[in-house]
Image (cartoon, rainbow, N blue to C red; front, side, top):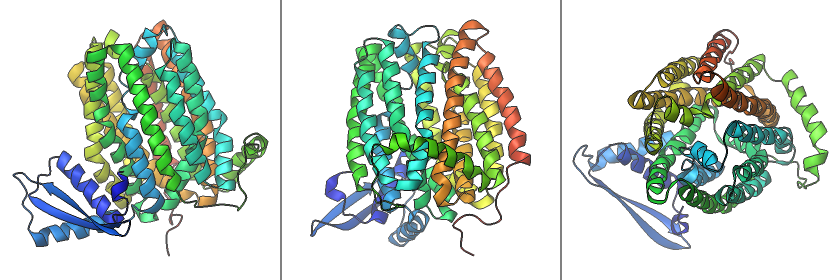
Length: 476
């Protein structure tokens, strides 16, 4: 965010963002709005003009719209607002390398199962810090881990930008993944900052932010690919990522601690806390509801299935579906646009009708999307990407909201840490297995295994995962 407008009231900033999102989605208004705020003791006037043919709002109608927006999004404040802004900054570049990453590794002599090895190392490193991350989050607080490790993440992208061979990408993946020790703290701070009745909406807004500000990424990646070639364009992209992540890290210094023991965290705790962190993370399952355990099993199945195919989907599209490398980035655009359009409605759906039905529906859509992709052409792959986006929104919003409903704040870090530890190991070996199956067997096999895992996950949701009668944090 521009420092010159940091004093503007949060609800006005939110209104501006969502008016902008409305404009990008085709909500065409003929309005002129003025926002007033204080910056450094002096007045500042921001003017938003959205002028075109379409919906015409009178002053009274628009004030009604303002009231609705303020009610719907009044929870976007404090730490949650700071995190949202930081995600906006990071997401401007985060999706840029995704379309051509597999081709980039291949161009740096990363053939055979190199992609699988990178994925395995990446997720094993993330698993290694999952337990201490969750333990330190609950023991010493959220802020220090989030702010410090965001700086580390930013610098890790230099390994990718300057890599002479794929081995440096392997090293960079390990460094960036170790910095994700802050992930339990991040999830815990989000859950701490959202009221129970807005958890579904809050989770969907995160997806909305990712979808909206990730959308230009594949387009920019495609443009850079055509202008500079594969390797040079990817180096430029990773330098951009470094700069934006450093900016987000500075912004996150504004975060306020939500839970603390009063004792400052020290580097020696990263090692000394490991045995106790593992013990505490296992013990937490004795005190959380049984449904949380089955939700964890469900997430592990989904993560394993997705990792089998995500590691080779670009290669499969090029080698089997015959989609040219220069066109692959285009399929990411409908995926990201679908996230933008569907995030808020799905979030409201999760809050209104509950978590379980959207979760089951999301799994079904995942299965349909996987089948369309494996048998597709360029157009069908685009359709499958839209369905993947809807399935992802349904599953992630439901899982995040249900986990917050089931687990009290004091145990959230440990639950997330345990879930991440197992999930990352599962995903790491899933990537290695998916890459191996692709090069050594029929290329469709990773997708067929994924469909089988979805079939197993569905009855887990239906019969074993239950919503609580009273959500954690909900008032009587």
